[in-house]
Image (cartoon, rainbow, N blue to C red; front, side, top):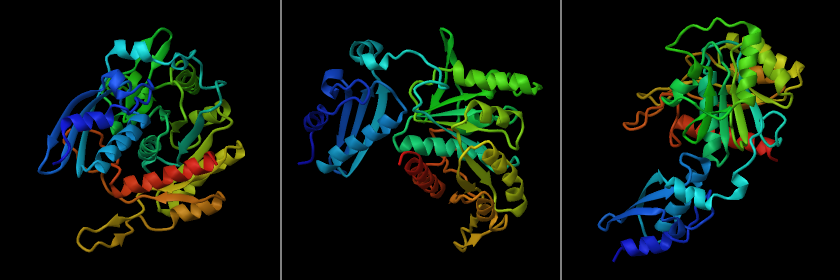
Length: 353
């Protein structure tokens, strides 16, 4: 006989909530269990303290592992948030931290600016998917959409909510376990922005000092293309910031991207590497790679900047999902999702070695 509901509950009761550090039994976390004995499928609904986080992803893997080792062929998991009174009762004192700015704070957050020489090379796509991939690897991640004139991160991630203010702090919007703040949240209906440099710099500074980011491992900045005011402000605000340069394989795109890279070098920002986007197209008919934008741009740029190519991404849309709208986020099993996973792992290895 396959697993019973009672056995599933007994197996999962000792598992601990990743934020409250109490067992599922203590938290009353197991809300529903259903079994399809003929297919050896177990479906479980769990309540936890925080949703859409790296810790949830790890918990998911733990629960699936426990049930598969007990004989399940497939496992379906759904999550909801625990009631506020349960969270308040068991929330660790250490989590009720004093608010502090990321700049001059604990110093644990690693800053990565994603830059390009020109627009349209997929810099924002790289920022979003690198952030999600870092989160999938268990990191706490935030994004500042600092592309003030061309903000697109909220649209790419399918974000419809807006930040809320608590006291004197702005709470970023969270999606796919990544915290996001963008100029797009503060602009009405695609109105054009006609600010001057000093005003832009003030807004960027506010994104660091007035947003309640919490405890982040990585904060990614989606910079405007080129080497303008915002890029200069980032170099002044964050002297420890690392940089990734995005290009396409086309020689002219790589040539222009070299300017952004040279600026990083002049301001002593370490370049982590080059990401070549739109590297090739895989024909569905022949299965062969077609280099529609040429070849070699990423490699040549990396040589000029004395760095490495971190990854090459194909021309392909994310898979369509009925219940999840996020037109710019690649799934884990997508070819580009797998490539981003490798890139994120390389970055973690380099920065946490």
